[in-house]
Length: 369
Image 1 (spheres, rainbow, N blue to C red):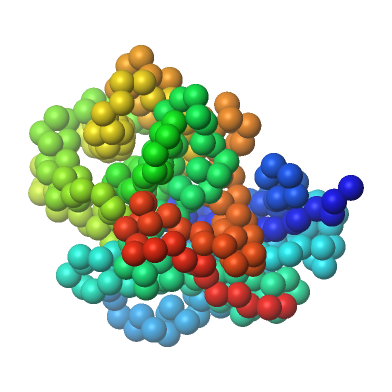
Image 2: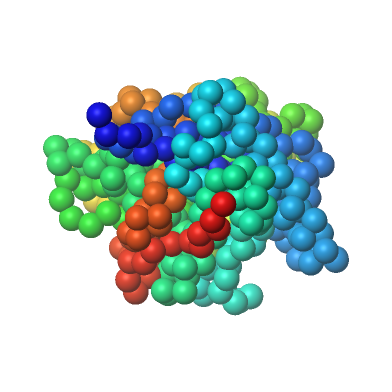
């Protein structure tokens, strides 16, 4: 019997709520051997969010956070291996997304660059496992957006010649992958998903997120505010496009409110509707009458958001990726294990039809144990 091809995928997304780690075997069809999630404390989460915007003493603060996150990523990997009862020597490589601190895609007034931290040198040293990281900048060097990168994995795992599929990732930001029966895979960010809702919930309820969307369900959508939010020029941009907390953040929301007095639960309902409408509008632009929509990411557990997506998509099927055999929480971490495998095997990890890169290239840097 062939030996397992074991990789670890590490993900800490825009919401910065937790580090997700998965152990994946790629010997046959990719499948998860073990999974582990480690919540990020409020102090480090606040520092991540603060560094997403220009601020004082950035370089020293970034350098300190770079090391702190690498230590936490390493601890998550080692805890994962303990749970799986597998020795580090059996792992081919770790694929670490890192924590995005700043993302300025092509066309940004501030220049064109992306930065993810969580020092892979230290991860390789602390775990004893070769680590692949810094995936996004190679795509940017080839003229791409640097994001989204997960659609290549979605295509490898979820493409079906018998139906058109859209994979919707609802993390801090939302992005979609279009998997037609035939033809090129497309993908792009559609706007905010959980980031604004989580910030608003933390400010007004003191909780990190609105569980199941219950608070949003208690409010009413403010149509004027929704119209103002959707007027942001990002929504009208053609693909390829990507975005982040640099654009859609709490300060932007407050400035859009412009001192209007709206019930907090009504603002939350409106933010949820913003996510649902922007995702639905993006998919409807694909001009296909019949599309199966599969949702992953934290938003898949927001019952109110899933309900609104089902309402907006009408007769089209809306489900989570659990229906395709993979828990929606672990898709992105699994994708970075796959991207590490692509890099180790000298295969491209980006899709030029998604990111707008001139060509498909091998992504990331390899830090040998």
